[in-house]
Amino acid sequence: MPAKNASKEDTKKEHPVEKTRLHRRNRHRERYDFTLLSHKCPELIPFVSFNKYGDESIDFSNPEAVRMLNKALLMQYYDIKEWDLASGYLCPPIPGRADYIHYAADLLSQKNFGKVPKGSNITCLDIGVGASCIYPIIGIREYGWTFIGSDIDQVSIAAAKKIVASNPVLQNKIEIRIQANPEDIFKNIIKENECVDLTICNPPFHASPEEALLGNLRKVKNLKLGKEEKSTLNFGGQQHELWCKGGEHEFVQNMIVESKMYRDNCFWFTTLISKQSNLKRAYQAQEKAGIQESRTIPMGQGNKTSRILAWTFLNPKQQTEWVKKRWK
Image (cartoon, rainbow, N blue to C red; front, side, top):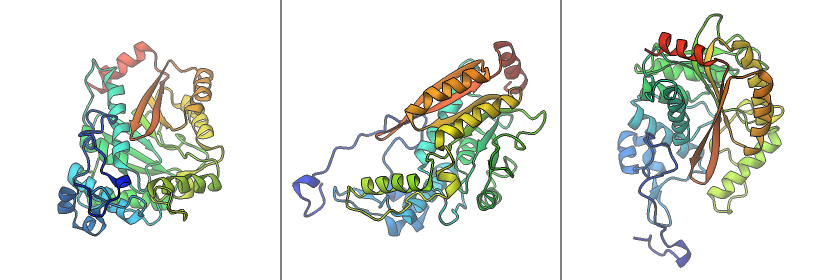
């Protein structure tokens, strides 16, 4: 039923039973059950109200509401008891982060006779673990992997360590490492003779703080249907989380170049690519680096489309030996 006093323009839209663009194993394909989530996390209750279509929802332009929704999702679906976020830091949408983990798991399965390798023998490196520690939480709870989480920011490091220490299901499964040199990505993070099965990364998207602010303003105006002029970082974000010199393109270029130094330490290197236009130059950097194999994996959430770029330096024989040694 439409909410009372709804105009013709506000007539309720039919919502799909499932968000079919999300990965088939994603726990968040159905619409949020705010009654269930509020029962699990009572702190969410003050932020839940009926929208103009008569559906329970939250104001997604309100950073505190988004933070509490994330907390409720982590408690309900990933058995996280204690989770909080440092003020002003990136509060990522969990369904999209879960998609990355599930598609990365599929990537591993393609070299393992179609079966996702699970358990603590599988080590994943999260470049830019952030204050939320989202990717390790999902990877550990879904597949039992172990994680290395790196970051250049001391506050993010402290926050991630606190989340790990506060949740028994995460302890002894994540090692948080500080990247002392912001210009480096893998250097001084991957140790000599250390094996990493998979790296993941959500690189800074923008090339300047001004560009980041304009991008966020567009996001807020979309959430407010064009009625909100003031830019509020609804998902948060510090400088290093949102922008870097050269933006996503340059960050990914540097990642590919540096990955060659660790060609024997890692099976699959991966990163998100938000802008389709950045793929061509990334492919050129891969070719120059001498990779053995590359994959581009499309992902979709709502109206947004992104992709995972993956590459490996291991030849087929080395890949077979790796699987036999680590995944069996």
